[in-house]
Length: 99
Image (cartoon, rainbow, N blue to C red; front, side, top):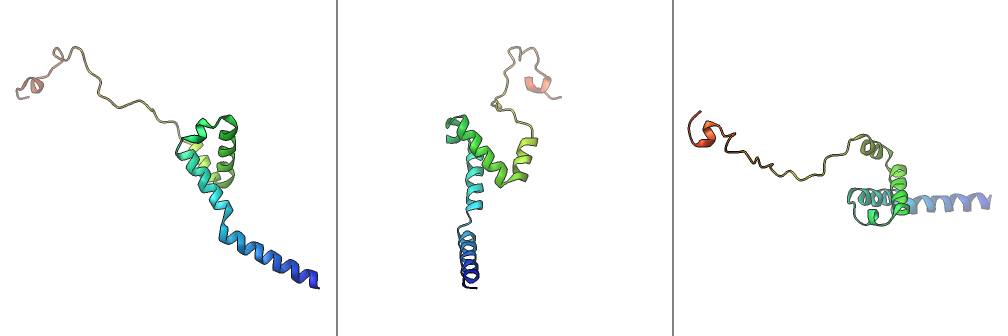
């Protein structure tokens, strides 16, 4: 009987501490930050990338699935392209007249 009471108290204390510390949420937040802000984890090598991605998939599977499904966006700069023949392609409004 005493062993059962001690086991219940230990389980209750462990549950309380895990609820206060929230290691699962902290681990998930850390992994999300590492994936979102591609800094040190990219430079950490393939092993670190694998660990971070695995932790992110385990702690936030819905978010990870959404990230995997979305296509990559173009990373090029959105600078205007200059037309070398802009004089030949001008319209009336570009020349200062009315359309």
